[in-house]
Length: 289
Image 1 (tube, one colour):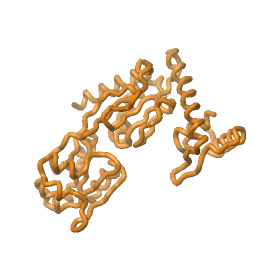
Image 2 (cartoon, one colour):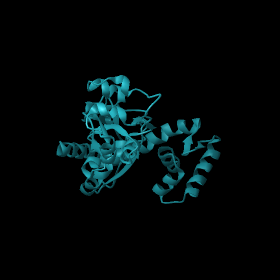
Image 3 (cartoon, one colour):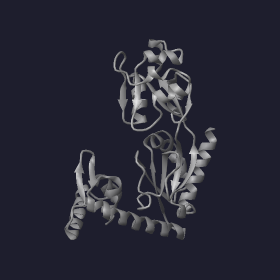
Image 4 (cartoon, one colour):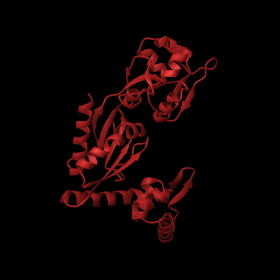
């Protein structure tokens, strides 16, 4: 059951095996035995790993909650290692959370931290994660959501592209290829309207200069750094690229529709590991303001 719960949460037999310190084959055999016992297939193989079959989703809603309850019961006793499972929007995980985690772990050696980067809101009620760092407007029914980071959309580009195209004013961005991000974030049309430019010029271009579309803000940042165009990304998550000189701001910022929120189950806000993580994050945010 533990092998199944880890494979369900990570979407990978290999990742589950690493967490259990066994081989991926051993995890596969354990899950196969569970499938024989239940008489139902629990996983289907997908292009990026394994995905839960209908019977697997039903079982995961129970096992995730059960293992989560066990972990929280141990945490309430205040002894031994505490496990904290955090799900974060990929750009927040890669550009804000992971570069700072060493400080948190050094200050809290008794907390075992597991981080999942996912664009989707995790099934928190099922107990698959303890804390989520999500992009949105804070409207997650049944969850306790606290805003901890305001975001602004700002255009950025590689310095060489700025020099080559002579991008000195926001209007001159019209002669640059634009990098568009799906599925979330401020669109170029929204940005143009917000900063007082003609939005028609920033709509999807059917002729003339072509841009590129990517499936995440991290990919947009990499594309911009390689000179593929101008990306509309979130401040303050781009500070490392700006500080290093890989990217420069090439236009005004616009407050984003969504923010980054700290989300957990209301009944677990007082757990020691959750309180410690929230307190540390608040300190980190205050330090960069």
